[in-house]
Image 1 (tube, helix red, strand yellow):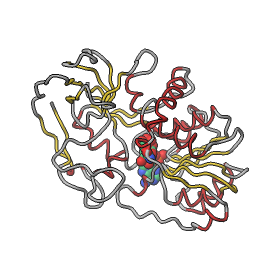
Image 2: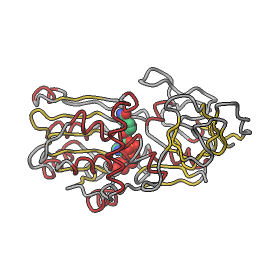
Image 3: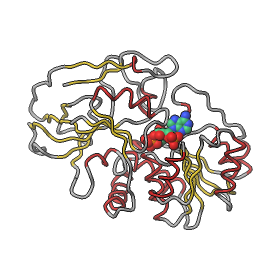
Length: 335
Ligand code: NDP
């Protein structure tokens, strides 16, 4: 069983040297346990925060332990009556080829149906990232048909799901993404109304001008994944009583400072800005997953995936995710 451990903590930007690949035997199962063979490992921006020491909403990753992470796979061996060999499952198996799971612990493993939704999508559009988009849209932004919504990191796992959910509610949806290829994909394949290239609009003035053109009626709702000058520009273009779901600030995860330049705009526009952590909102998961599964099955949400091959490729793929090298949901294919 190959595993990737957190070997040491980043000093500034994370590097491949922070990780260590090791091999060990898969342990023999005890009664009640299940052995899962992972087909795909999910790479997610939150993992960067776990590599740091210090206070956050989640405990930091211990040194010398297998990196935390979502996985999909199949039951390879079972000593629990509720789990059969061959069951397709989603769990938190971590950066390794196999994991041993307590079959009695609630929520650790979930069976999934792969007849209409491919297995890997349970780590993306019909998994944690999709529910994240759903929560911010439905519970925080709470849009009305015809309103203008903006989402940053629009081509990614969360952003693409957000677009489909918002279009289904009759909104005008404007994405922000890095580079012309991603922007074309966002409008042509995901069906957004417009997309702004943040690389071509790398400062506040230029981004504000691009938002003015793409959002002639102002912005009623915003889903923030990035932070920095994008959030500043959105505040400048926000309508009265606009709502912002503060989901992520990836531009600052690798140590970069992210000031908010004019917080007075929140008052002037009487805005609501609310942060959230999707894993603390388990009550919405069934409803959100049902809607996301239906959007995928009907072809109204066609997410893209970036797939790295083999566990050893995980560190570089993860570092690339923090720099926008992924195009769609970043996965590692293990078999
Ligand atoms: P994505 O698939 O969107 O991949 C990350 C993307 O972020 C990159 O492709 C890149 O897109 C963009 N990006 C990376 N670095 C920068 C940068 N310096 N400046 C601007 N953009 C950058 O990831 P996810 O969909 O998994 O996650 C999106 C966001 O959602 C993250 O901020 C994540 O932390 C957050 N999140 C929050 C959760 C919560 O519970 N609050 C749960 C899940 C995710 P591009 O090339 O287009 O710039």
